[in-house]
Image 1 (cartoon, one colour):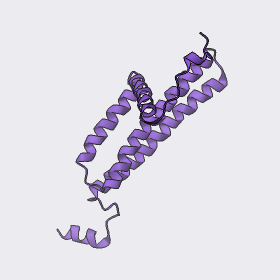
Image 2: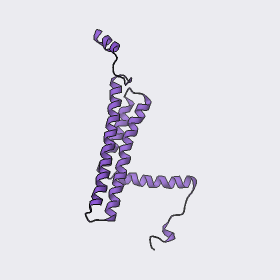
Image 3: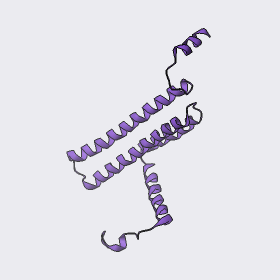
Image 4: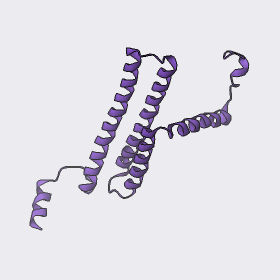
Length: 147
């Protein structure tokens, strides 16, 4: 059977069956990504961050942004890995464009880590500052000095 044979293409599904099949593809992707060391590290970071958020004194929207930033890193890592695998499928020979594609994927992961780090720095600042997020006012500084 050739790759273009109609029997190789699964029938189009609708409704809940389509959603369930999409979930099985997503689950297969997750299992594959768990074999990648970088993704495992990011998954552990996300799990640890999620637990830490339970104990942080910041507003719920900030907690959601902090958690979303960690999932964003994992999403970008998955896209980067997909790009690397596709490049490897297309050519096993060195080519500058293939190197650039892989390097850009790596840069995207780095940028997502920087964004997550900035969001977490803001959240931690807010938690330390009792959730207000604003710099201490002169009155508050005066009251703290009086204590």
